[in-house]
Amino acid sequence: MKILLTYISGSSNRKDPYLNLLPAGLCSLHACLRETGYDSCLCNFSAWSEAAIIKQLNLLQPDVIGISQWTHNRHASTRLAKLIRRRLPDSLIIMGGGHATFCYREVLGEASPVDLVVLGEGESAVIEIIKSLSIGKTWQTTRGIAFRHDDQFVVNPSAPLLTDLDRLPFASSYLSESLGIDIELQSEFILTARGCPSSCYFCSSPGFWERQVRFRSAENIVDEILSIRDSLGLIYFSLRDDTFTADRSRAIRFCRLLIERKAGILWNCQSRVTALDEELLVWMKRAGCECIQLGVESGSQRILSMLGKKITPAQVDETAGLIRKVGINLSIYLISDIPGETEEDFQQTVELIKRIRPDDGYVSPLAYYPGTRLFEEALANGLVDSEIFVKSQEPALFVAEKPGRGSRRLLKVLAENAPTDNVRFEPQKLILGYCYATNVLAGEWYRQSGNTSAAEKEFSEITLQEPNNPWGWYLLGELYNEMNKQGMAERCYRKVLAIVPQHKPSRLGLTVK
Image 1: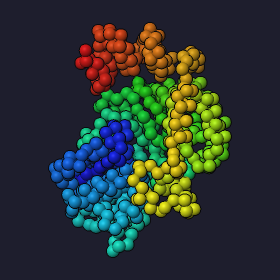
Image 2: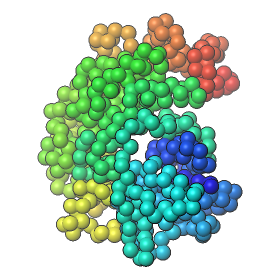
Image 3: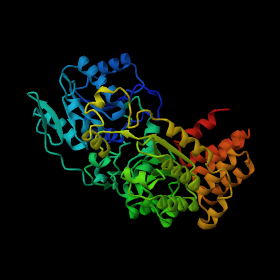
Image 4: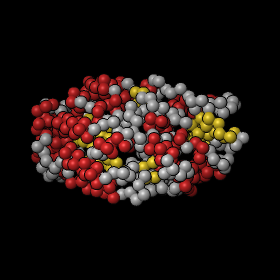
């Protein structure tokens, strides 16, 4: 039995590799199927033409197709399902993902090409479906799915959530069995937990994960990181949990292990404002954390309460100050164009930005998503049409009638208030002593400022203190390349490859003259 797991983004930016990364859950499902012995192929159709998709379908001839559907790609994924139904009329088409979970009635509507929807976490349900098909049994009794029978919607009881995430194979472990995927880029992004302890009104995570948070162990995460480093040569990772630091002891254990096992990586993560303290931040910095993204959303307490954010601007100030003190880059998420937001509210956000001076930030207009309290309340109050996600062709459905002005204003403030000085590095060194992440950030600042001698000093210190840390050698190689010192650059690249043999940028550095 041939299984195809696939994803296709919306029509805009379809060739942008970062915007079109596969959902982590689809990679995990693929790994589980391969580990169980099933013939699964993972495919990202985002940048493919319809003719290319048809050609691939004809070659693969899959019996079962799983499609990942989220709000931004709801129309593209539906069109893909229709195309597959026309080309492979006897196949079983499964839809899953955040949008499909909350909008299964629309997905399974009249003349739908989709046979069933997996609701929420998908591994147990899909494997049970494949097992049933392989022995000639019906899949209709599978827990955690919805389907139509005799023009009636059938929603089976939920499947138990997986309790031990360490038992899952690494999501990155079978990416070689894939098409249309940048394996190195996809492997850079890692999920270490499922669920979020917060309950923000604009987020569907609590509903999707049934308001439970489950964690992979620190040992399991480090094992995956080192596996990817050794097999693909990656030395930078992004941990994409809603709140990586939700379990403080696990986060510290993770950092300890990275240090003990001499991982020599840099990484970033997302955190809740109230889930950080100075001791934890010091551990994170020593283990290579170079950037933390905080969900700040607004500088107005009134707006924070409207959004269901159980934080205060004072807590943002305090946490941002600690991040700055330890010397980790600070990135923030903000929400703009919020109905009811006054100019006073807006200016409070502006003043917050000026106080904490983040290194960068992301601004998004407030949007509706199915499964959120924001959308359900708007629906109950008659503010939106119940079929808005079907009728509208827009990838994001913003709450404001004409969003954008608030976003532009905030982005301008962020750009004007980003740190531009280097005096912060010496105090950081007094607090932490030697720390390679400090040297990397300081050296990169000097390098971009044109002070090559100061940059060289920072990077060289890493090679002296930690000869087996690839970052010192790699950044020195890049610096020497820019200085047209090719012989010295090649020596540094060879040092990197002696530590991380699969490091592609260093291999490229040796071949480009």
